[in-house]
Image 1 (spheres, rainbow, N blue to C red):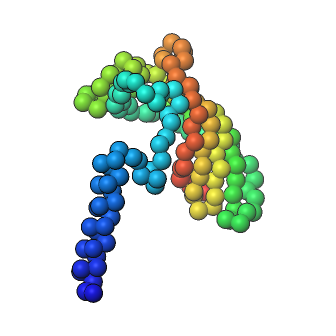
Image 2 (cartoon, rainbow, N blue to C red; image 1 turned 90 degrees about the horizontal axis):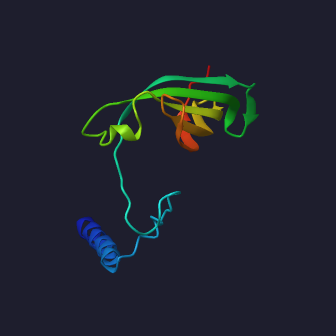
Amino acid sequence: MRTSYLVGLVVVTLLAIVCGTLIRGQASPAIPAVTIPGVPTTGSCCLWRIHKKAEGDRRVTWQAPYATDTGQTARGATVIRLTLTSEGPPCDENPGLVPDNSVLQLRRYTLRRADSFAHLIGAFTLSNRAGAVLFSAALDALDTYTWA
């Protein structure tokens, strides 16, 4: 069988599987259903785009590096403080949702490898300019942090 026919047959088969799954209304097992904390799994929900500019700093106090199977690794106490301002419409659909000069603060830790791969883990708060907490949650993010 020629390569072009074989590739065409594979593509048609994959399309049939995907379309069959969509027609039956079932999610692909490769894309599992995800529950978002605080968002009900049924009923109506609102969704807004926000577009903010963040200015501030990130400070990390690194402990001594240690050897691991993936190379030198270090843990550091992390403090992030960012002041947020709206970038305006159309992407900041409801600027009052996170008012200008709101402050995002995070305190926790970062793990970093010598190749600059890093993992930031911590709780953060988002407060308005008067200091009232608007939102708080956990942040778990992959990051790049240059070894210094």
